[in-house]
Image 1: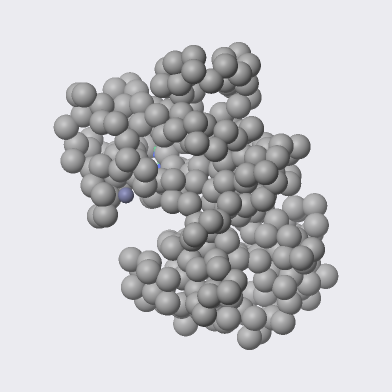
Image 2: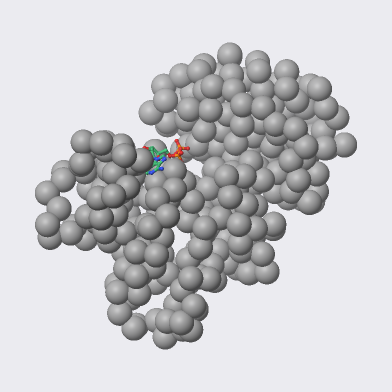
Length: 291
Ligand code: ADP
Ligand code: ZN
């Protein structure tokens, strides 16, 4: 019997089956088109296996409130065809097993804590810097949901004095995501991030925004480990610069050796690498089974 996992993204769905140790046994990818078409492929994939639980890490916003009428739905997404899609309901029609459902980044945080860079901690953040910016959080050993779920990618940031870019978030213009996501980099500089590797000013500015945001997360949630992944972080020079800005923005206020002396082990890359998302969904399945 396997655990089933879905990493549901805006461009693709990754489906996998794996075991209790987070090992992926088989995986397949399907493009995100319409719910009918994508879910047909997803269901066909899982019907090949005997499953004991399923975990879904999904793009959002999603409804995670178990007492809500629309629990398990993707709610107000700008991806119109997926608006009000009953994700958990659709899966449970075909697979009558426990189903764990959470945001993609909360899933990744859970996976990193079970099997990756945050092993042994009681609190951690998983941040992705890609098409969007999202952050999942474990606080006091549990995934943080609250009213809805945190949306830490959309916090307001202090603008760099030399940055004239208006920002590209459709809701807030110059929030963190509007200033520092992959599309923000492309819009500001006229080229994709991958083609800007040698332009140090690009990454200095990027690190200014990401470091600033992480400093705020440290001040508000006090996590024991911060994991940063996503396409933009493929720029290997970026993370060291981000760490430098975290220290700068905190400016000695948080007196802890993790920050002052060992920041290289405090703000880190995903221990699970590019598998953080799908292993996170496996972790959600494992958690659902235990509940
Ligand atoms: P998604 O967020 O859609 O799940 P990714 O995490 O891969 O996917 O993020 C995609 C974004 O990351 C795009 O905006 C892309 O331009 C950017 N990106 C991908 N690779 C690189 C790279 N090597 N350097 C800088 N930016 C990159
Ligand atoms: Zn925003």
